[in-house]
Length: 593
Image (cartoon, rainbow, N blue to C red):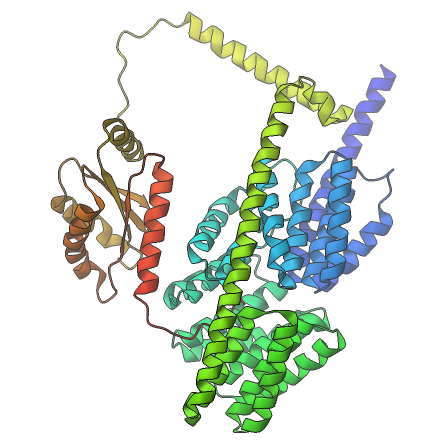
């Protein structure tokens, strides 16, 4: 009896200690993004204090994950890759596979900072697969954010919007997992969506999501500085010049919050680009000289190449054409050496425009051809990377199938999990309570007299859509889905608009409010050609409600393998494609790059 009392007292004493340690690491998670230099100091102290006697394997592994992300925030990409590789191996050794996606994300992020897409894509796909398998929404959100940013940079907008929408939807569920590890600020998710919409030239919506990021509770320190800096660019291109200046000033005020010279250099380079576009040439040159000095000292070759190009543009603006041409040729040599074809495409375009304005059409034509060649090489590299990505996904599916078969054939699951006595005890208590509850409800159900009449619940609108899809497949008749984005229509007008649309449709057609800004219409016994005629009728009805902005309705015809989700996804891609085709060419600079 005395021993049991002692054990219980010890457990009650240790519980608040464990909770306190967990809360400390949770606070550190926010700190590594907001104030990375301060976080690095705290992590170093924690590492010195941790021993096998006073900390668990999970706590030590989590500190490694936090340190890896912290190194990324400080620009120490090589150190982050090395730590991530060691950390993943340690997680495998400890059979803590739920921690592996976080180390893979850290490796992928560092490779993206080196513009090494070939390594980053398979790492991100593996991280997403593991995050789903082990139910790790914190890892899933971060991986989707990074992949969405990568797809934005490579103009793969349909894939990017799918990943970022999913990340925004999942974010509220981050803390449903039993063990916290690390997660990105919500402000970064909104900022990534804002950058995507900016890249598609939807400046008002880009500004909307960026403002959501600014207003997020975790937008502090470095996080707030980065979002304000991007917002200044978006506001400027959205013709909100005064607001852009205000955002730029707020961003500059937060420069002292950046803890490392490399972080400051990247910010000064981007602020120099914004100042150049605003016509403040001297300010742009001053900022860029600070950035270039740091890039040279730290041997940042990619950053040096892009800074050289920006300095050339400043020299062009100062009418120092000879100096500008020398700098452009230097940037091109660096780009060819680093095989940065996407950048080279941009560099050749600058020289093409320059010689065209000067009337030297022979030189302009030569650089135009080089621009097309660079674009072709950039596409070849990206296609090669995509093929590697798809092969990696197929390989992961095969591995997952083998793993599933081995788990089915192995009944000793608890032994494989290697839980310690505390978790085992907790598991048994929960199972006992759950078993008692199930027994109680079964007994109660057996004693209840069966009801003579059962009222069938009416199907929800979503279930009606799924039933219509099922019927179309069974009956082998055509069916087409329409998707309309109603974000330009006031919420108070949505109900009368839906009534008007219903009057335009047939009785068997289905219309539902799929989300806050999306209306889905299902047209049974209708081909894609017939659906286009319906779209023309609906467009005429919607236009007065929407005002001057163009009505854009996506179309997707049912195929045998389709689900409702895949059909809506294809309609969304069709809608986005129409939007992209309908836009006029504009400046392709994106703050996401």
